[in-house]
Length: 240
Ligand SMILES: [Mg+2]
Image 1: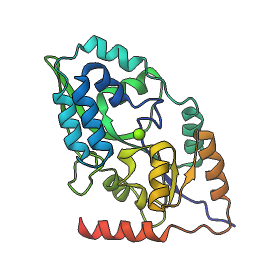
Image 2 (image 1 turned 135 degrees about the horizontal axis):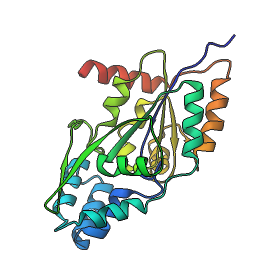
Image 3 (image 1 turned 180 degrees about the vertical axis):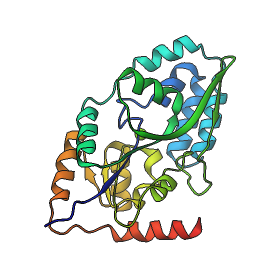
Image 4 (image 1 turned 120 degrees about the horizontal axis):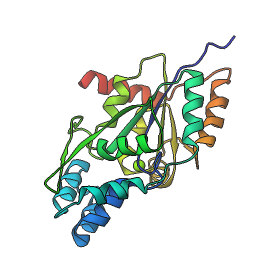
């Protein structure tokens, strides 16, 4: 009999659970356009770290009206297959961790509006004080360049030798973490990154693709962890 396999699911928020990148939508609307464009370009070309880009982006917003901000957040759509995916993971007993380099302010609001609950979320923190966006980074680690919320550390802290780790993401903030997981589901920018870096991945369009593949992996007679990911996790664990 096959031992019930434990998959730990680590997933991105912006562009993965939400249809759009909420941070980008917010800064495009409220920020000074020239500055915002340059900062995002610097970030995507690895000229500045994620933390530096967030700090600069928030500074590039002269004033934000909270009511307008909330309305904008309320217009964001979520990927409709997320509900089936959460049900599937609950049924199978797979824990889900949402690892976001975005902000709790809009993630909580979007989850509430769309009745998504019961997920553990790690993200950056955002406050709006007198029309200014004030970010803070409770999970910052200087070893993580592409995400101010060091996703890699959450993966290491929440997985044991018995777990098969799964990562699901779409973009820049996932680059530091994919090498630490046994199975990677990638789309868009993350897919191109995995191709370039020769990191094995499964392409996906929506969460139905992920469910199908996990079902397949779950019932395989033999399932191997990714050797490179195991070594990476061990190395990071020793440094900590
Ligand atoms: Mg993303």
